Length: 177
Image 1 (cartoon, rainbow, N blue to C red):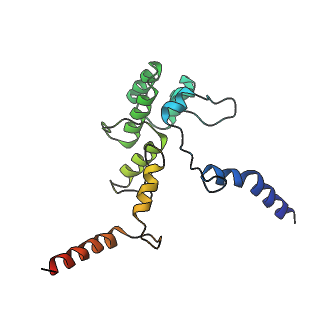
Image 2: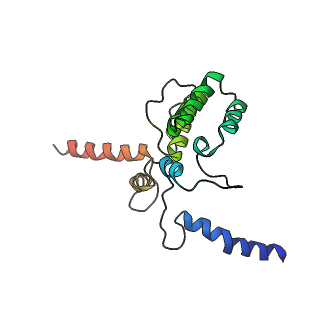
Image 3: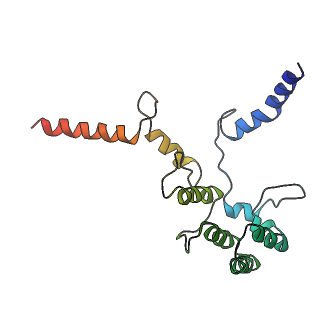
């Protein structure tokens, strides 16, 4: 009986909030997460908070210790700390990305935490695309991609099935001659 009360309290107090934030409840707005610049420029974390940019909101000495514990080479730590001192937080993050993923130059600038995740997964998976692509500019691209993968019955279609359907249409077109 106590478990039921707790479940109900959790559902009312927290689960609804989580579902609402992801556009599953209420007015069904899918809120876009903050970009790196928004995280860096606003709402610094206070005592006991765990959000924010580690390169912007961490104490430099604590950041250096963390980087050492992650086995970042001393030369890389020096480069990152110089970027942090120069207030180039996104470049420091990019350098961290390069060092932890063992690439010389990633060839793009990191502008969003979701982009960091997506690019990391792409590198770790050997260049294969993710099943559920996370866009850099929010969720609008993701919604468009998911709508393209649906047929008229609202069931997912594979890319092979879509290609087969296109080829079938071409066969019919050329067979009419």
